[in-house]
Length: 539
Image (cartoon, rainbow, N blue to C red):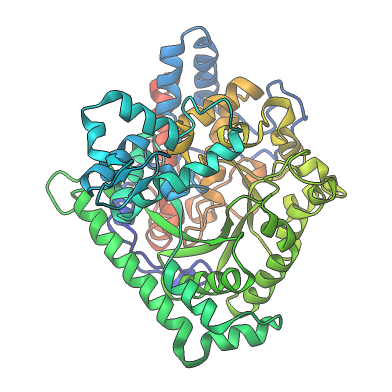
């Protein structure tokens, strides 16, 4: 599932992927005819955005069906669960696992819960009790759920603080990375998604020790040479590869992938993103960046690097521009590795006004981010409209997790820049962030977009398409370059393919076989065909 070869910049050298991607190559129903009319920038209102691409009859009927479900919550929920929803590109593995499963793992691993509801290693001394007690004590169980998630969190704590505090409380229960992935992958497939990029910290302890042994050097080129010298950096990368191997083996066992009844998650293509703790010391931040970039350059299961932890933290604010320059330098050493960054996860009052004016800009223009996560403070950036136009021109997508933005920052509805991004043509993808902590799923995020911004069915469909179009999955895509804003026009090899009527042409089949990204997009289009038949009476 996570063993395929990443050659995003070298598509001709692709080899078949693991179980998930191999399954894709056998799914060759046809792709729906893509609309070719150029798309226009939608108006920045909360009402339904006007459509500026051709709408197929099946889409029109499905849209009418969705409109008719407004007063039927149960059937509306079924619609959004069944809706194909692309991939999740902004997903923290430890925060994506269901809280109930974390409690189960804590019990199975003999962990204890202390007076602050934090999971700690055994033995369970005074003031602690076995996590396994949660199996039979429902009040104890609910207390842990509230401490480890956003469910009914205490009124005396801000959403921002409670959200980030949860990770320290359940952290000890997240050591079995493969089991966590099995839980999350199954959920992703059950939510009718087709791809996952999830964030982890590779070889964390060894990276810390390397950083401390080398020490910081403001000359970033010299610092990098010191890390590489004597194979020190490569030793950490090798450890990270072994971690990934172990996680993959554990995943396959937990998900029963090699049995006659494998879990749904076994067929999901998954890629790792290395996360860097932006609140750490300068030497640790740079070393983690170097590990993540070198790892992605060597191991195809890893595709990118990201920065995590609160962007408003003291160290993160003080060193923000330096960290962008660190990535700028390291990109010269690892030019094929992708970068996506948490940027603009800030609001007035959370930080000083001047800190709202440049984070997204520097992430894009200095660090070279191809996607940004959150981007909530867009309109506070200097020349924000010019920045948005630059993002649109470069195809820099913004990953939008509505629930996370509301819970952490209190930003929702018209206060959210969702429509501002769309109005300026910035690619937008919906994501979950930490669905286990937030107690939501991706269907909730799509339904929120519909109910809050009045999106039509074709607009929801194009959001799902965008989440695969801007994924870091290897190979060329199904859609012609630059066609996303023009209605998603298939590449020449697959031109004329029709939904559910005939298999792809020989040229198209070869394109799918050689490009996992295109194959994954094809799988979603086939799913849309079935979805529209079910909800739009398509023939």
